[in-house]
Image (cartoon, rainbow, N blue to C red; front, side):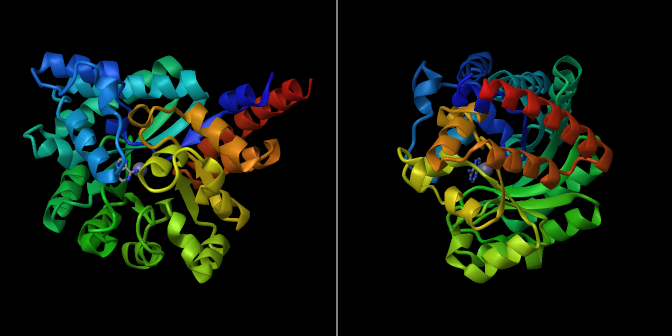
Length: 342
Ligand code: ADE
Ligand code: ZN
């Protein structure tokens, strides 16, 4: 077995992946046809090309606009997990979704979440993968809309819905805008995370930790601009859920992952774990993210093992679940290590 195959077969946790960004191009095209949504081209995959977060977010909204019935959400959620399993040996995922991208179009929140839960439960039954859900604040929304979204999440809350996150374009809308939504979510017992320092200075991480009370940081690259914050988040063991390709396309040099700040974050001893973000929308998958980033950074199996285990540690699975995941991962990794050495 060569190293690329090893990396694809390593058991994986994902904590940073957006449901709407995981919709297969074929499913996007099917749903557009089903609901009479005109696409600019018949080849949906051609729409998945951009050179800025703003263009990306436009297509992300277009994909969202084709999800209407409970079955649409269920189908796309199941397929999304199926792709993680077949392309990267996914074992456990916590997946974002953006309620307001749907409710603003008149889709009831219950339709969205019940459909997602249908797909997630089907995946648990048929694929043995547990997937939990994190409702994301969309940063371009007004703060009142985000707060109302959290109220909806707390009102109708299947067990799978465990957290609140925040995405969208970061630079124009800093995290403190959503302090009310985060306070309400915390009171309601949701776990908290946020996209930060994907495209903004390190200050946003401090705000997320100290003002919003988040437990993890999604992305976090610009922490490197603040050595004190690097030290603090290393000492506090904050998990950074990093995404090689998506951010390389939008913010760094897509063709050269050797210069990706993820590499330096790892060298600084930060607790990173790798994720796919919006895999088909960036022409990637979780297996390919490992192959690309690990080879570019010249990480050996020991470091890969550390990053994989960081995913279990940083997850919001129960202690029992974490123990089970660790045991299963140790077993699979040892078997893979033996095959790699042969
Ligand atoms: N929504 C989906 N993916 C995102 C990302 N990487 N950054 C901000 N918002 C997003
Ligand atoms: Zn993201």
